[in-house]
Image 1 (tube, one colour):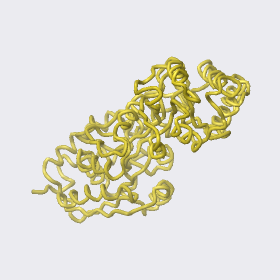
Image 2 (cartoon, one colour; image 1 turned 90 degrees about the vertical axis):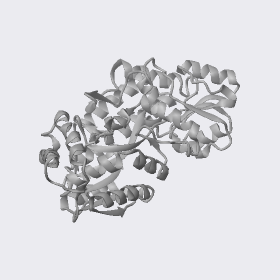
Image 3 (cartoon, helix red, strand yellow; image 1 turned 45 degrees about the vertical axis):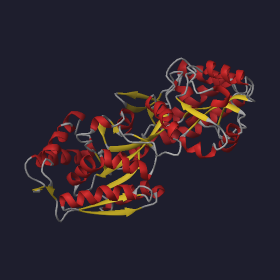
Length: 423
């Protein structure tokens, strides 16, 4: 028996969602969002009757089959209609920002967490309820979808760089520190104890970020789990990391070099010339000739080596006329073991939901290592200011690795970046 949506407990949930819709979401709090979980649960103890209502969902080709499977069950149990619109993933962010204000956008879209700042600034995204299975989500994934204390997206996967090591040279045991890793690499007799992509002379702050955070120098200051626009990588901690780059750069040990780009790094590691590297799961297909293991990145500066964590998930439009129904679809039909497994099988990224079976992965043994690295990571900042960081940051790192004065170069980068952010 279906219960008409919009009565009883569903009204309570709707009220909360309407509150979230108003004022760009700044009138709600994390405390006020919590009751919607129980309200939704009460509302769906009996299948809702959403006959005549339609949800439009944007999804890319890879993940469409998994969303389609959840949509078919949703349609069968609620009477609603789901229209899936296949989009190129590269187009979704811009199209969502452009079309939601005109009323032409979808009710739900798939997307990346680092879009969130722009989506909120554009007023096109609503808060979501993770539902009864909220505890099954990876905390770092939920944090990535959180902005000013409110959850604006339902995560389903994560990705992060990790330490990849040649087990024929250094075994499978994870080194605890940078020095321990380098010594093991030297003892192995490898041509290079360690190599890392620096994107040539452009610099690659993203890949080296866990080494930087181990010095206590995050790119932006975090408060209450959310990023502020205050640059966090200045001061003594930043200078210590800059000195590390110099000491291990081309005028130092040479372990870091601007002659190494992405392809060169993969070739060196695959050929057995490097004992260790830091890279993401996207390189594994290039490592066809080497036996490797994946572990969390060791600390160089004494603190936890926390990589950036990227998250994929689902957003609900702020202009959706079916916000309640969209939220029920996500909390009751996507946040389930079956749907999360289907999403993984369709697009095997690191799952953000516990219990997903990853044994079908092309490199199943590597999954645990990447997940361990992600679990000690931090969300990639989704604030709009992040877009201004890369050119200053990458250029400073590259210059120091090439031999520029570390403190002077780093502090100039901090000054220039801060001025750019302040406009």
